[in-house]
Length: 384
Image (cartoon, rainbow, N blue to C red):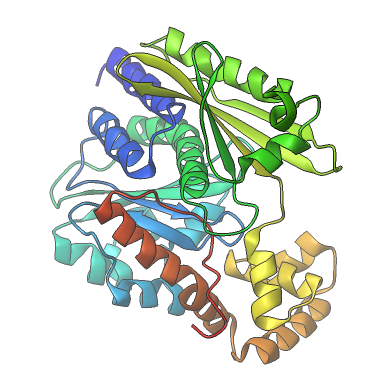
């Protein structure tokens, strides 16, 4: 593949990441760009992850609209050499099953059960991490038996565009949460026309705008300067139809003393220049409130649980929290007692199937119905 074609594909993915597409459209368009540089079998398997836990929140592959329950049970209850969370948390952020198994992929039970039966042979997993290192997704890409292995140039291309893919996925999930809010303090969405007039607002965004400094939306229809600044940076994308999109981002201290995060995305439709600005409170990860409400875990127990879900060992958890391994073991004993499990693997499986599998299944239905996908764990009613 020529460097020109590779650069065109790279620019296209960067531009798509800034266009404010719904997640399914973003994956479809990105699949075409990836295929122009990296030939593969079937289509990629696209996953979104909760960056706090590295557990799957959605999956998209048109030929496999629903993940088999057995695959999920294997991923979260059994050990294997090629797991999503292991790749997502790895330093380099990618791995092939042939590399992980020393050239003998049959050593991987997951490969034997869920790659080979679909006609695949090679499996390459690429973590989708934003510039700040948070893993918002993962891509699995495959080749048939007898095909060339993924070359270093192909892996480098996918690694290079992985940040744009992560940013696009995160933005798509935020827009989905804003357009179809499910929980208090969901992100809000402001859509502006080219003349800076407001085209639409999502329900509840007014109180978020009121918190931003120097605005007076409710009294005089005046948007905060921070919103206009992010919108202006995002609109530059519309001036460069053939160039990569710009990721517009700002972190603003609100009048109430909490941090607010703003994301800008140029919207593309009928050659009309518009921009969407997403406003969200920079709240702690939703998994923290979930773990407290569902299991009564203390703050430190929540920290330990989050690191267990990510796949960290006792030694790694101790180093990250600056405590002894004995202290980690004491926390684990308390966590196991409160959650009713006997091992780390049972803990991961319980949290996933209680709070993440419902989100995954809901997102699979949403993808089929053309509704926006959502991120994060699903907080079920107490009587569910």
